[in-house]
Length: 158
Image (cartoon, rainbow, N blue to C red; front, side, top):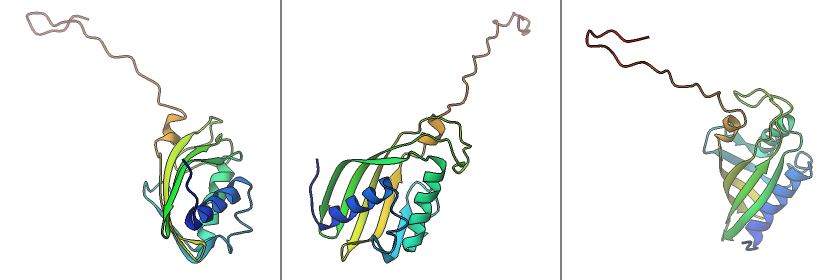
């Protein structure tokens, strides 16, 4: 489902700039001068200003050079827009917080809420699937330890 409006258009422009790698050059145009990004899962630090948004995206792209965002749903009302996204990439570059590159695909879902002022992003509340980093390389499963039933004297049979 896609509903268009000024706020939704501003968000779609930002997603397009991430996907075509032009966000750094358009940082003064897309987010407003006092832009604030709240990372609700605390995967990355919150960021402030247009440069802060571009820095977070640059860090993700350095870790996953093929990183892409696909908008699955979007809608807006007044100065707000919401997008449900599918994020994809393969972690072959720089480490992500707590995760070295392992060359595995790292798909994740996210919901981002934006406040838009004058056609520019003013504030974002972003919630991404923080467990996706860990699902890329799950810990090895350990077989259960089996013990024989204990004898009447309390000693276990081995």
